[in-house]
Length: 605
Image (cartoon, rainbow, N blue to C red; front, side, top):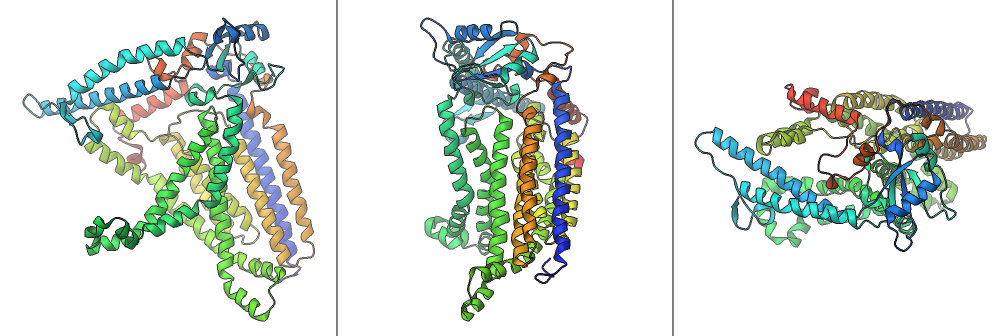
């Protein structure tokens, strides 16, 4: 479009293209929303029952009466409001100490297994074997040297009775104002999750329970006043992070130049005097600082999302993905677009100043003329993403190297081998925003520089192949949220479309096209489409509809099974509950490992 002169009749073709892109986007989003909607409902209506379908989370329970326990209070309330379907409740616990003891015992157990495996390997090498030793101080570098097997055995014997005692204390002293309530019918649970249970809306707040594997226990019992404070505080911190994150990066990059580091840390001068090391540090140190800061950002956003008081892991991931998307749009898309146009317009600014013709219209016109060349940067960016990014993903070279290093030097037990081999789940909080950024760039330049469609098609086609392979053969999910991520993706798609329509509106105005006003209608239509999808589809994602919940099941799980599923690992004697699908995924992963395929990285290479 940069090759078209202002007020040319050819701009009509680009105006029609804006409408065409808008209509096609609506159709694809509607079709996708309906597909995910149907998949979610079919899973929720499945004859195979799941614990979360019989459970609700109750928060902000009012204070108990005198001589009444929290359990008795919740029992009495739900037997009155749901007399036929209510089974029992489980009051939320503050089990931080029990969790800490459990973690310490698990760590000691793993280290004992490792020490015994090392001793067994030394015996196989010949003789009576050498018992492993380690130092008890910080990082095993200081302190007295002890026999590892005896030390960790004694540690486990000390921690086990402490953990058992803490479990009894937790069960006896539970007074948190939140509970999980269990029903004998999933229709009753769905009705409870959609009902107002108290005259005061901030009391007895009931919502669908998350899947057992994704519960954030520490957030479940946070009171309403605390959640209402946490959320705006987190939003303010997120806003400041999005807007000003590049300032500390620039500061760190400046401080990490070799000259500044020598001034701050004089003893490294002996290293910098070596010419080879000096050249390497000069070349890569600032960039390394940048990469480290950018790598820390997703973890920071996950921590901020958890600090909001969100009770489920999938919701935290969705919240972090939204924050990361806005960060990338602001710092990558808008940053490159605006600053690229500014820097390329400096010479034009000088000419306007000399001519004394510096006005708002002239500045906008100058910026508009520099907008199409910025598309070249994004075309290159998209090409690098699918050539290098997906190339590394499908080859899995980095996980392959890490696995072999761990297997060679660290792994001695079967559990350590499985942990090193396990590919882990998808990183939705980083991968989804990255894909949405590419979609934002594509939609914004789809009319201005249509050649970007070719590279976007290649990016998403190769991405589909890579992620399909990863979903079927590599990654194993930690939890299942039944498609709850899609409304988040859908809304960000529409945000990207809205940004593209506003960009087109501004650029058509720069081209002095007299019918630019027609581009206001797609913006209004986008908002109307958003409202339609929100009202038609989203309610069935927020809760399970009664029509779906009323479908018959093969076998209703026992209340004991459901309670065990929702009991935290540190309060159970055995392993935490895992549903059949999750167990199948884990068993398949183990069988693939035992069949001679040592890692998914090796298989894909």
